Amino acid sequence: MPVRFRSALTVQSLALMNNPLVIESARAFAARIEKEAGEGLDSRLRRAFELAYSRPPRPEELRILHASLEAKVKDPSAWMIVCQALLGSNEFLYAY
Image: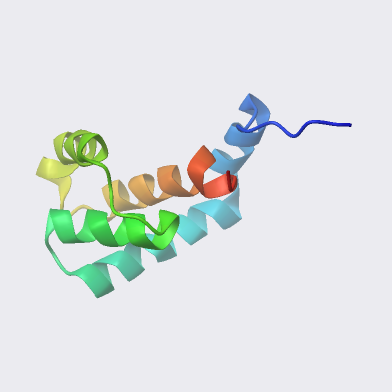
């Protein structure tokens, strides 16, 4: 019986990173988070994880994203990149 991989292959990940539909979806996702969660970094991150993964962010995820976004919290392109990363993650792509 064939076995399905539990992670994306390199080619799949690259395709998701460069796909115009994914890029536009990430842009719309970032705009939705801004509209629904407001200006706060924590509230935006929590809303993004709720929408993408149906769970709150883990402490380690918050720590990493805080370090990356702290100076760029109002930069729409930074949020688009975060949303694109969430949409391209194994957790988003595969239900375990």
